[in-house]
Length: 259
Image (cartoon, rainbow, N blue to C red):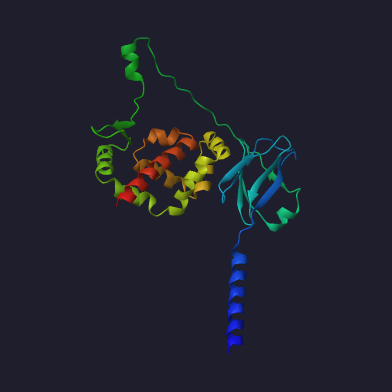
């Protein structure tokens, strides 16, 4: 009987060890070369981001790069004027060190642009009336350390701001409570200099949506409900957008702890 129990215990321990071995993620340095799909020439300064590990790097003058990765991690490649690309790392890619990733150049068709200059007279009092008015309203309330940027969604802008101030916990809980995995990545993204440099040069939200696994409309909704103006949402670069979301999320965590 004791021998049977010992055998069963040994079998159980072996089974647990095997399962743990299967679940262990093996990290290693993945190296490859990025080339122009049309010319096969190596591409320098291409941004490479591991979306799973939230780390980034850039290619050298020979198009080469090296980044920490595991099998099934997704790498995101971005370069101005070229179509962004995602690839999934496989076992074979680790075995063959001369892997080439080709990026395709974008073809831009420039449409006719009609420039309509403002009709300025040279008289300040008249010209001021002809210039467009910035509708990015800000509201400041005595006793609060920061103002609220309500945007141009009038006439409900004031109501939205007051609602956010009077009941901020509910607002932020609705924004972030359903996205815990995406929001945990915020700090990791902010701490990687290569990713920050990439986001600072981007205005299309494409890289940001890939990193946070959010749709562009979700990002705009978060910022709008956090009282950032439509002007800011439309014109800020991706790094500024990231910092804005992060700031709003930090407020949410503080309020959530208090409750």
